[in-house]
Length: 328
Ligand code: AMP
Ligand code: MG
Image 1 (cartoon, rainbow, N blue to C red):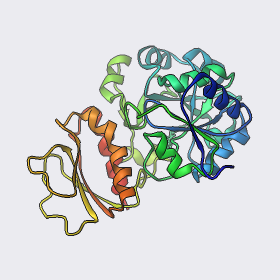
Image 2 (image 1 turned 60 degrees about the vertical axis):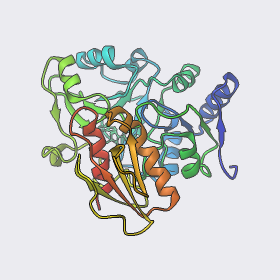
Image 3 (image 1 turned 180 degrees about the vertical axis):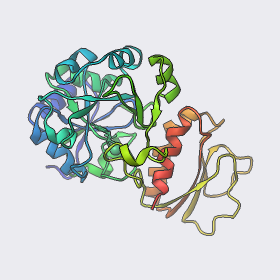
């Protein structure tokens, strides 16, 4: 393994090179529209094991399997009408569906569960690689387990570069937050397991029925939380403390190791003060959030005070990640 991985621009030749690495059983950092993924052959137990090892991810935390299109998934899952309806509306895109699996998906991928999480991603680079392969790709976020998810190829290189051969560069991820996960094992009782870019309201409207909230902290989480949905997650080295939405951090930072992050540009911009958007646009905040946190973490700040978002739309997903980053 080289001292650090190669960052490949997505030329036809480099896409071929990365596809071949994946055929050879390697794992490769790849851009998606949500965050960068650490991809490997989802039908190979050895490749899946390598993903867990590289990330330091516990084997109880199942992986999401990525397909070129919904048709490619049908051979590996128990299809149902709710999956078909949501796939027609939201795929390719940032929606992961949990369904019952078929025997072709190795147990290690699903942490021994009879269900599998599946998604058809939208990012043209990820799609171009899938189109070169005759197997789906298991891909969790390409970060060491528990750390903030990567939204740039450099984030992957900085944290996992010595453990993988390659990362494909697809620029900054559009959404910047992990996919929404919805449990559709029973198509009549859909439930959100993780908030993300596709909202509960949008799912409910498309399915024409209520969608339960079984995310961590929803009150309904104890019995049926998604495996691997750990309370402390997405954490930088720096200690994270939360500022209520719309509030100002009152104390002046006591030292230069303390940074403050607001949703929008404040009137008075003091030292060590940062903002995620000019105007408070939630999509922009999500897009910039992990990049800014990682940059300030690298700069050596030891305390980050971060403003929560309004609890609507993608704001729910932003706040979910922030609360877990702040959890002890
Ligand atoms: P990541 O790939 O890091 O974004 O995390 C994927 C997450 O998907 C896991 O941590 C689980 O919470 C969830 N997940 C994956 N497979 C399943 C499954 N079969 N049932 C429920 N949740 C799942
Ligand atoms: Mg992750």
